[in-house]
Image (cartoon, rainbow, N blue to C red):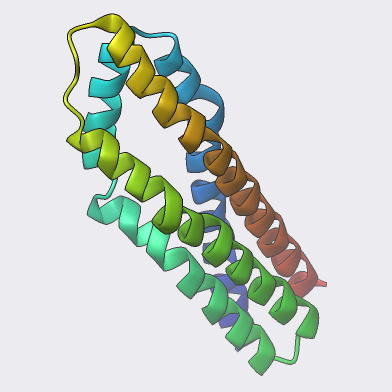
Length: 164
């Protein structure tokens, strides 16, 4: 049972690192790059990204991560490792609220609105659409990044304490 708990805990740690990296990449590279592009190109690019991201591989990690974290918590509970149990349980809660919850409540509706937008030929009109979108979208993505990084750190501590 101990080996199973550690294996699932490590898988959860790996998946949480992938998701933290995904959100970090948007917070500190992708969106900054799009902000420097012609706003018509930025809108067009983000529309394509928003259609491409919810693919089966992404969704496996995005939606599967809390299941792995909860499974690890349960397995550590069964082995009597309460420190790891709580670290994985709190990690799952942080990611569910800060990763999935914010994404579903805020970022996806903003993405859907941008996908439906017609790209204007006028650069000033396009800049208004892009600026309105990123002004609303970015703070929440920074929060998703922080929550995912915290979930990763907590899972890392859970794995660490399971080995001691």
